[in-house]
Length: 285
Image 1 (cartoon, rainbow, N blue to C red):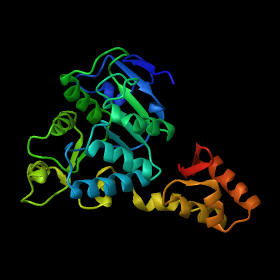
Image 2: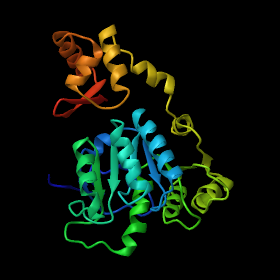
Image 3: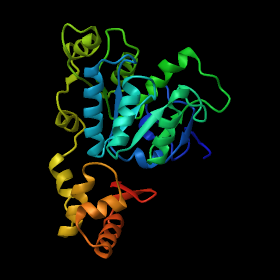
Image 4: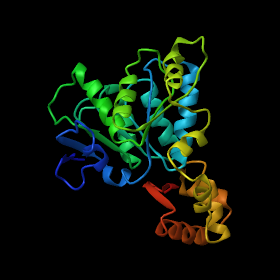
């Protein structure tokens, strides 16, 4: 897949990113970024070194937000970033990775498969660096302004007091975005950064509904949107609410005969309630 090059004058260049104080003059994109920018987007960031608490809460919150149609944005780094991307994917959601180098040179290399999975699931990889540019130390801080810049809000799930992820918070505040943080054990250095953010005005997040409320997502209407026009459609939608499923398993679990199941799935796809990931795998749209 070849990357798409966007400039500040291109209609497809994200308007929210164009409006920041120092937007990249060029943006290199793999995946349907324009479609993803039409959905609510949450940056999920934090420390590279993660405790079991940080792992659990990141997986839980990012996964649940993704189930509600929120696109998870992060930097494909070790630790919280990769956990957030994986949680979105595991729950049938969409995610965008902002890279510190070219989109055809995955950094870190150990996340090559994760990057491919992001693309295969309908997500995107973006960068301001063209092919051939080597990753430099200053790229990581510059990358953080783009993570915040394409997101409606930023959530820090676990961070030490001087975590690099707090650069993303600074950019988010400068860009007028909401900042959220997960409170942690007051004796844990790994939660000192998030607890300090909350002391200084960040929105404390203790459950998924806190995130959805901050993003202005009406969970009632979201639930109603998952109701089908008949019992067969509602049954299939309820099964997919638990995450992606292959068609064969979905049909068996639904209890519908093959003809009715195929007809139901076709109608749900036509009405935009489900979408195919290919290879007979389905998720909620």
